[in-house]
Length: 239
Image (cartoon, rainbow, N blue to C red; front, side):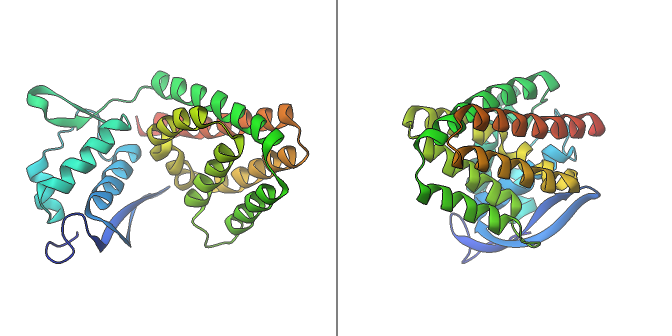
């Protein structure tokens, strides 16, 4: 994949990454750091089920596979561990963690309630300028070639900021990091999920613009529940 040299550890480089599609895995090129490259590739493989629970993730073997030193490999594995996708086994070696249906459900239940709280607070606190910013993100997300996963993340970030509560934003940041690989994969696993998500975002924005906190919270819970439904279908299909 990536090659060592001037674009080595910690630098930006043009790399080959794996993007999960409904039909499997597709290679794509993008500019990112070495650790980001490894993290993106491994997280996509784990969520898609191409790396199975218990599979060893040896730093030396991965460094050779990516043509990099062990430093960015270790950094990527530590990030994956923080997200709950890998864990340390015997002799502190990394391996793919088994993510149960119950564990995912618990994660998304907590996430849905906190995101709903955020949406309700944002409905009461966001300004017309904030509303315009959210609408702009959704307009860009409607474009056929849009990076929908990235714009989805941006939409939720703006809502967290609009809630105006630093403690809530900090807690959500941790849950978001742990759920993000699954949330992104839903858009590749089900083509129709993108259109459904667009409509759900518009419903959330409409409630926020109307300053209807209760309706905004309910729309966010429904949005997160729909995402979890697709993710659990993915998990069942791969098992």
